[in-house]
Image 1 (cartoon, rainbow, N blue to C red):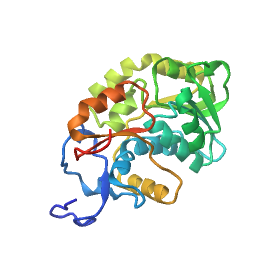
Image 2: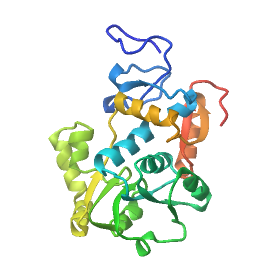
Image 3: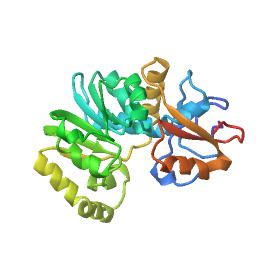
Image 4: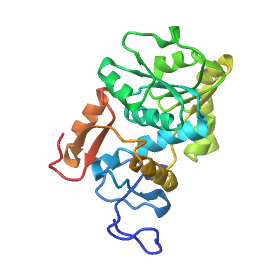
Length: 268
């Protein structure tokens, strides 16, 4: 790490990690320039590859549970895609907040989701959870599609849904992406169906695009070093094998995060 002119929070050689803000997304590179307020010292207990699995999924899970779903001790939380990158961290954060957690996973992911703290695991390949579950206070959807449709049926009236795989709505444009009102209007139109479904069910619906935050990354680093949270790494690819990493991602079967490193001898 190198600090530019005027930067005084970090010094060269610090082990740091970050998530670039929305305008900086869209490319893979060996170097990136990031405002220091979006940077934090990485967890002392992690190597660089493991730490790389924390910013995007960790910020998403934290901001969904803490800020949008307002998880409290005793909250009944449903998580779809419990064995994925966001899901694995959301389960651990929910248990840190002392919530009761039910998560979906394939048979291959059951043991992992249980190990991370889920109180109940639903095999989505065999069970339609909309027929067996009810009365949840909140839900974090990381799958979208038909799964999201079913989530509306298991929440109590007044419950909250946050999706990271569904349909963006106006707040996504204005608050998360800082986009124009024209984009907000477009999102209002495309999300009309899902918002009507939420209104009929008596619940709130929110599509979340996390915001970069050095403060939140410092909080997550503390939770990792204190043993409350750990990023789950599915596989690691060198930068030269990005097509293979995307191919693995598109299979939909990753357990935790797929990591890309800068060196060519990382295990895949």
